[in-house]
Amino acid sequence: MPSDSTTPRVSQKGAAALDALLAEVVDSHTLPALTIGATSATGPLYFAARGDRVFGDASKGQVDEDTILQLYSQTKLVVAVAALQLVDRGVWSLDDAAVVETHAPELWAQQILSYDDAGNEVYTPRKTPLTLRHLLNHTSGLAYPFSSPVLAKWAAAHKLPSQRDPAAGLAPFLVPLLFEPGTQWRYSVGIDWVGVILERVTGSTLEAYFQENIWQPLGIKSITFNATEENIGRLQIPQARVETDGRVSWVESHGSLRDLTPGVVYKQASGGGGLLGTAKDYLSFLAAILRSREPGGIVSPQGYEALFTNTLGPRSSSGSDAYAGLAAYAFLQPLDQSLVADNAAHLGFSVGLGLALADTSTGRRKGSGHWGGIAKTGFWLDPATGIAAMIGTQIFTPGVLFEPSFNAVYARFERTLYDGLE
Image (cartoon, rainbow, N blue to C red; front, side):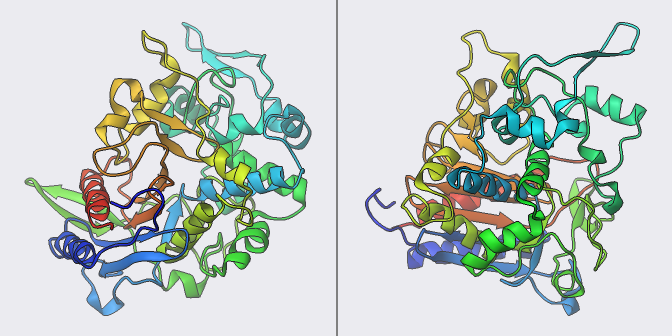
């Protein structure tokens, strides 16, 4: 493994080991297809893809560097970078509650939901001012229905519109709070609201803002909120896991969190999960973040530091319910057990990334940031080692968040990559 002062690269032996892992995983149908890659701040270290674009139908072509993936929650990091750009430009502060109050009054008005013993809804006015920082680090009091039984009950009773509906606009994000901002961590629609506020403050759509301020400066062409005939024609078709008599197979998934009909434009783009794009282009974005350690990047060095600075307070010695949501979500992810043990004691969160607060057995160093998408894509950035990496397939099994085969391959990819660095 390289020292902190050297530029890492993947050795010839390391590349061969990654090639062998990719072939084993795809040829055994452990995953329907797979793309893996790594980059330093200065350029690609490794990239490869293998498998049918449409599983079981080789006539539809193979996955490659031009294959489009549904990135889902990997969108969140892009919104975080955009938010930090506006901090750099003096447009807003992440800790100024007036930004939320002024530009998202319908969110500002939300109260804290609970239920009494009779099952009736009870609403309590919020006492703590709500800020962009709360929205970015998932401590706002918001949630997703899938991450909260309380909110799921409320959503069913109020017929909360689906995020899949292009005409739904803001409605899927307009939900009550579950706790005082800053007191708990709960995965949420908070970053969708940051996207809404960004649009209102800048007068630009998220699509246009990203194109002008992130994608075009980096020469990235594939990442977009918009489904077209061209990019959907390059989409890796999502598969669902089917297990029969202990044997796993894959069938085309008919579940999705978004409408991919070419030409359909969402009334409100989802800053929490709406982007499509290639793994190669997303790796270029990650490389640009690594370069931002020095002046002249897509965010300032101060913005870069913010992405890798933990915003969550220390755990109490007796354990804390404040991090129960983080611990529960962490167990669904392909993370080293050293990070998720003891109520996720070695897992933090910045204004855009989950953070490793300790070195891991799979390779990434203390201070690394990560996230992923529900269709089984994932990435991490490791400033100490000087690399970023991404792994992606497309698996969407309705009602199932945990995919053990993907998590196992993710861990093997990470370990194999680090073992091959020189």
